[in-house]
Amino acid sequence: MKNEELVTLSLPYYDKTDRTVRVYVPAHNESESFPVIYMTDGQNLFDEESSTMGCWHTREAVKAEYERNGRAAMIVGIHNDGHPMQRTNELTPGSIGKLFLPPQVPEELRRMADPQGEKFDDFLINTVMPAIEARFPVKTGRKNTAVCGSSSGGLQMFYTALSHPDIFSAAGAFSPCFMLYEPGDLANWINSKLGGEMPFMYLYAGGVDDIEQPIRHSTEFTYNIMKERCSVDTLKLVISPECRHHESSWEVVFKDFLHIFLNK
Image (cartoon, rainbow, N blue to C red; front, side):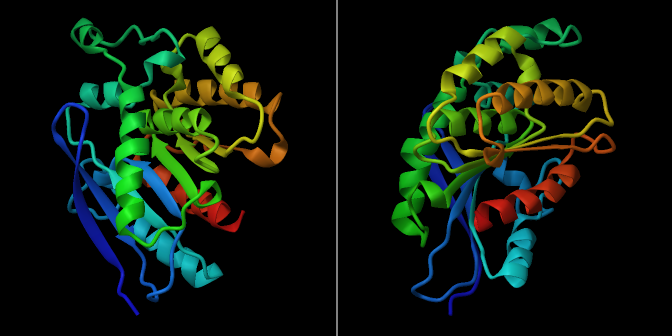
């Protein structure tokens, strides 16, 4: 029997820097392998000590799911330790459409806007996934592979899942920043991706603070577009008006997403 472990990797990013990727491997027998969830903001997923905003406690969620239902997943967290605008750029795909930044965004930050989500997507698909599959006991293939993220990370993983439905069977898009786009552009992009076998999409939004309120409206807008063309078993919308834009909220819905992914 092998004990659980949290392994830190350093993988080359497109800007010629190295990116920290942490991998949680549950306790397992020599012959055992796991489905895998690739997640953004790895610095906030595993422990309070390394978190910058709060912790999702994903290790505890995986262990609790295993104790209840006998199923576990490997968690791969891709770090972002940069400036908030750098993170937003990294996790915002430009191909969805024209950015629609709120009026309160300062002019200095507007000048810094440079969507690069496609590069993150390439890093995940062509660098992170091959490294994980070569080194760790993961079950490969679409049905065993999911993505999840929050805020800009929720937007990015929504983009990645719909862009690669042949690779990912599920995506958790928690408090996704859909409001960064003109609604018409967002609708056109989503409609261009719908059809065929779709990944299961778990959409969540809160509503108690200023940032969650527009996120809630744009998440409901996105859900309404998708439900017109997607089967009911490929969508789940959770709205928690009392919850804020914070890891403590996403920690709760992650447990539900994990359960659904492992039991589908």
